[in-house]
Amino acid sequence: MSFEAMGRRGFIKVTAAAGGTLFLGGLTACGQSSGASSGGGGQKGYSGDVAITGLASLIHSAPFFIAQSEGYYEEEGLTLEHIQFPGGLDTVRGIESGIGFGTSSTIPVFIAAEKGMDVKIFGNVYTAASVDFIALPDSPVTSIEDIRGKKVAVSTPGSNSSYFADRTLREAGIIPGKDVELISVGSASDSWTAVSQKVVDVAWTASPLSEKIASESGAKVIWRSRDYVTDWSDTCLVATGSFIDENTEALKGWGRALKKAMDLITNDLEKAADVYGTAIKYEPAVALEALKNSQNFYSLDFTDAQLAAVVAAGKEQGQITKEPDMDAIVMRNFLS
Image 1 (cartoon, one colour):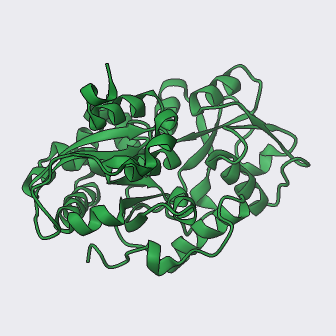
Image 2 (cartoon, helix red, strand yellow; image 1 turned 45 degrees about the vertical axis):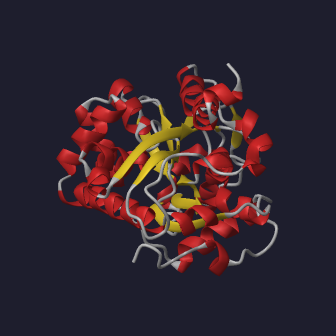
């Protein structure tokens, strides 16, 4: 099937499902999606796709599932199809290449802006470092202090799991490469396999998979990155400047819908967990435990400390090479 026959939005969906990276670099300059909108910035309704990083695998996505399932989108005149992307930078490229808006890991937005992409942050989403570290139920490792002389599985060099392993260990006075060995093994599932086969002692993971593994195997969470990183923006709302100009009211409506979903997580955890668990096909008790562990980390608001921490992390990893123009990238009061 040709690109013309499939249509741009269909091609984005197929490629996103396949990983997102192959086509995105070549289409960045081709303009935005032809998704139907009810009009310009003063119009409320919108129908189209929205890019979500790690939609089915990361706890930050709970408000999006809830807003859709509970009719909060519909109340705002929004008909949205969530399109999953595998990583933050892929998500930002998808947004810039045609989808127009979505949610991404926060660091990649600053990376993209530095590279000249027309992307802006207009809301926070998940305000905790999301990487956890788990071990077998009978492991002698019961705290981060026990990790000396052991091996920790991370994803790849430069990944979030690698960064947070290094940072949290150093915060605890443990030096990677000297006191502990970091082993790159791949995904969270691969990491858990490495622990199960006793290739490493501790695996990286993230909610809700942390709670799923614990429920099924008795695994124990040894430490969470957020125990050591107290100011953070893990994921955020992002759109291109032109999409914001053309769909201001629709984006504000999206923010209101997500705020209702976040409020449901705060005020009726069991109902929120039931909706979320159904959406991701998790057992109710596991979804409840995962959402309970993250209940206090959903917010549309930023703090200066959160943004500074994200930029500092990007610089430390060599991903951000200069001080970003915060006022040009972050629209702090857009959803107020």
